[in-house]
Length: 322
Picture 1 (cartoon, rainbow, N blue to C red):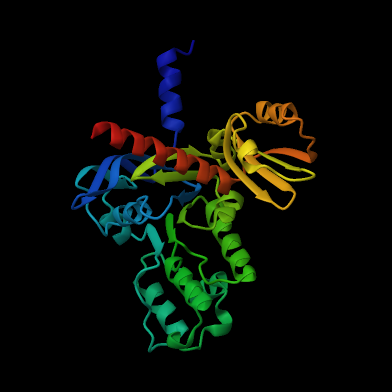
Picture 2 (cartoon, rainbow, N blue to C red):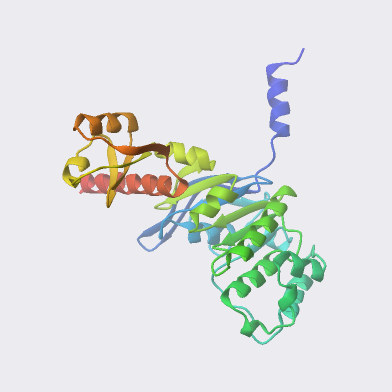
């Protein structure tokens, strides 16, 4: 007979070890606490979007993960070792916004250098093709457009068989076709068991691409789950309808459970914590809405709702502490 202890031990052995582990990580710059008591683990094969408003701690989190900064306290490991050691072993590829490229060389030469330095390098032609830069391989790096530079950075980040790929605003400057090619390549990396972590301001990309979404606010993990779970966590729903005649914004603004109100011509757009009660109150005012629609929030609206609520809570706490 299988005992409970044996079953638990078998389940523990079957669980994959985390690729990245943040345990109670803190990082401050003077009086600014950029990362606060962060606990976070990433696993093989995940595609993870890192979201947050400016100043939320995204860049600091990536800097710590890549060993560019040292935590003030806590434990941070990549593949069970230090970030520096994991990078030396060729397990990590990174595409960052900061840092320039070598202007005085050809694209092929620069990518070839990255390949020569990687302990598990891919063939050069494969790297160029995956990044979509075969046609500009003989162009001087200093003559590239912004979108082409981003694709070259992508090639440098994927010059070898990295187990973790870290991307900071990777598609900035890319056109629609290049973005589709890029994310197709990233999905193939994840399908091969690699972990892809990307920070982005393009929330539609996070919604469409990521298996998991992590929202940071004030250096802390505010929400962590699938895109659907993040939307559900926000709670509010969207209510849209048209009204005839003069629209009284003050009257609509007093509707129950309202979190936002927008009026554009005859169209009213509302976010509500209780859509049923809000719609009932609209009829209670003697109004007759046309083309009424009630829907869940998109990821962008959910992101705004979560971070706005968090800011309001933090402000109230700060005022109470004074």
